[in-house]
Image 1 (cartoon, rainbow, N blue to C red):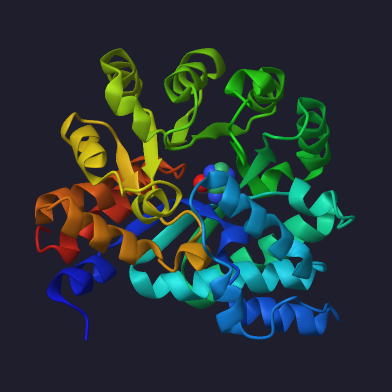
Image 2: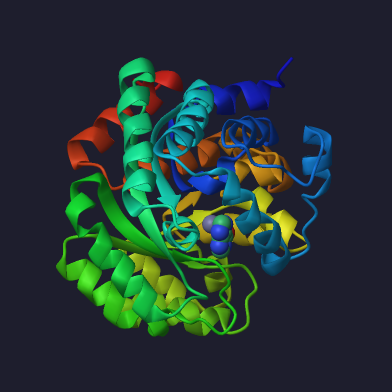
Length: 338
Ligand code: HPA
Ligand code: ZN
C-alpha cells in the first residue's frame, strides 16, 4: 500500500532528464543477458549481485558499474535494457525521458557503435507505440579517457545524429575538468547537438568545474551541479541563463553521506530550474518516484514544491515549447487546477 505522498508522486506527470541506460541493468536482466550470450557471471544469484552494490563514492560505484556491462553484446541486448526501463517508468507518471548512454563503454570492448545505438533506438520506437512514452538519447563521453577518443566517438555518431539529441560527459571527474573536452563540445555544438555535462557531487574543484561548464563550454543543462549552491555568482548566472540542474537525491546519498536535500531545496527557492531524477536506478534501488518521495520527506517539501519540480522537468527538457505546454496542462489537470 502506497503512502498518500508516494501515491501523489507516482501519478504526477513528469520527465526524467538524468538517467543512465546502463544504470538500469537490474540483476534479473543481467542474468538473462548473460545466459543468452553464454557468459559466466562471478555471482550465482541476484542476491549475490545485489550484495556487490556497496559504494562509498563515485569511483567505487564506477568500479562495479563498468564491468557489469559485459553482458551487453548485441543490439537486442541494448533494446531489452532500454525497453525494460521505459516499461517500468511509464507506470510512475513518466511521460518523457532524455536518457544517457556510454558508447565508449561498449566500443572499447569491441561492440559496434551501430549495435548500441540501433538497439536503444528500437526500444524507444517500440515503447512509444506501446506505452505512449517519449524518449531521446544523449550520448556521453567518458571523461577519464582521452579527449581524442571522445572526438572520434562524436564523429562516429554523426551518421546517427537524427537519433541523438545531445551530448554529455560522465565517469570519473577527478582530474578530468570540462575544459579537457572544450574542442569536442565545440564541435558537437556546431553539429547541432545540445550540450550537458556532469558536475558531480563534492568533487575536487567542483565549483571551478561548474564555472567551466557554464562559462567556457556554454552548456544548455548541468547534471548534478548541486555544489553551485555555495557560489552566489554562479547561482545567479545559471538562473539568468535558465540553465537547469538535474539533481539525483538518492544517488547523492549513495556516493556521499547525504541526499543534499537542504541544498536542493535552497536552489529551488532561489529560482533555479531544479529537476529530480534517478541517475542509476538499478544500482541505487530507487526509480524516479522514489527520488521525489525521499526528497519530499527529507526536505519537508510542500505539495506546491513537488508540483514545481515536476513542471521544471518539462521546462528543462529538450522538447518543443508546444509539447512542454501540453505536459504542463496535464500537471494542472492532475492537481485539479485545470
Ligand atoms: N556520475 C558520473 N558518471 C556516471 C554517473 C554519475 O552520476 N552515473 C553513471 N555514470
Ligand atoms: Zn549521472
